[in-house]
Amino acid sequence: MKIVVCIKQVPDTNEVKLDPKTNRLIRDGVPSIINHDDKAGIEAALQLKERVGGTVTVVCMGPPQADVALREALAMGCDDAYLLSAREFGGSDTCATAIIISSALKKIGYDIVFTGRQAIDGDTAQVGPQIAENLGIPQVSYTEELIDVTDETITVKRQYEDRYHIIEAPLPCLLTAIQELAEPRYMHAGGIIDAYAKDITVWGFEDLKDVINPDHIGLMGSPTKVVTSFGKMPKGAGTKLEVTPEEAVEAIIAKMEERHII
Amino acid sequence: MSKDIYVVAEQRDGNIAKVTMELLGEATKLAGELGEKVYAVLMGDQIKDKAQDLIEHGADGVVVVEDPMLAEYVTEPYAKALTAVIKNYDPNIVLFGATSIGRDLAPRVAARVHTGLTADCTRLDVDMNEYFDFLHATSNADTDAIANRLGMDDKNLKMTRPAFGGNVMATIRCADHRPQMATVRPGVMKKLDAVAGKEGTVEEFKVEFTAADMNVKIKEVVRETKKAVDITEAKVLVSGGRGIGSPEFFDELQKVADLLGGEISSSRANVDAGWIARDRQVGQTGKTVRPDLYMACGISGAIQHIAGMESSECVIAINKNDTAAIFEVADLGIVGDVKVIIPKLQEALAKYMEENA
Image (cartoon, rainbow over all chains, first blue to last red; front, side, top):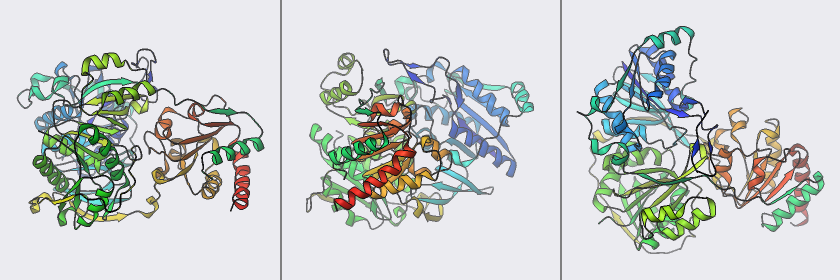
């Protein structure tokens, strides 16, 4: 079975701060990591391979430095890796990103594609379903559990707010992983050494231009464009009291009365 | 020419989601600014009788697509139906709730019609003056530069959303493609009061489905009653953070919530620790809430948490640490130990209720 996992390298958003003067993200010293949901996808793919055999290919679009994320995936046990990196790809929104990644997947081949549900930097959850649409294959997003797999189908648990579905999808299909899907394994020492011995295939625009419309990628080809980005100003603090617990309770009740809560 | 705002109604077992009514409220405001109309797209099986409710909450008309294949949400039949509606009616704007249905359906359809989609919006603007009022009130964005770039008569949808874990807000436009599409966070927009007997058009739209459209098989649908509590619906939330010290203390918060007719909620740390169910989590990776009262108990106020509760009408925060960030968004801040104050508050509230019953 040919299993492909699409991953994104993201800044650890817990560490990102905004420069209040320039409105620019301060990224210096902020570690880059494999997006959490994507890492659950890698683990699920590896477990699937252990169950039914086959290979796990990992694909990442990003700058040359994203090579680090692919090495980590190889060290976890993935078999081969592709980095999609080109000036022409820069500034792509989700629609354009999905076009680039799906074009690469058409060349790589797949039986099952995993993506993370969403990335912690953009939080859009759009690229997975859009890749599936471009490939013309079914998607199951919010995949919480792999239940069964055959040569022709995969059965999964799909999470909703108030229910879950047990869904049987035909292969090929695309699954978007949530963190509950699988707890990622650690890289092992041998794996790390192997990871650096393996080649990462780097594909630029030239490598994909036979399957890609240049008018649909990059900043110019993206339907959505950023007008502005800005940091939020605090709402403005009200009263802060350092008083005895009894006085505190009085103040709380007074505030509840004032706001007609009680 | 593309015109009108279409709200994709979300229904489960025939019940319309609250976010749909919120979207109709927001769409009504935007449509007024555009001089356009608001339509709801209602998809399901034998669902037509819900159309009137959508009209009473703001829709000028409802496009109904009925088929047994649409009884339970499945990506492809819904994507096919909605794509057909979009191709037929050529909307200017299409809005979805940013739910596990909307966020599955919207990207699939956006890719199919090749247009832009902005996820998880927390604010929508058409009118530039209103947009700038918002920017001036909440940010230090350079509006002169934006005015030069877009012009003050820009009528494209300005879609504003948090990114980078709530550290940054970004406004996105989709100027060259139609429809302009967005998913909108539940709990952010305000629904209108229903106008009983309001009139509107109800149009049945026929989509030809084939067996192949049901390209996955739903083997089981399991409704989870434990998930029935929806903190976004609560008028009062008593929310616990790391400072509550133990999972048992949620019982104490629950007593306060019960006295106020509210629910308990949580910061991410306690959810990750397994102290409380994930559907109670407020914040960037949890839910956005805007109750009348949000009581933050032992919550320090990480930016991801504040992103999920800062629109609350009133915030009361109790925290031992007098420099906790939560105090910056609190109407009333109490520097003190929740473990001491909450039991006393319970007592005082119970007494108050008795005296004022």
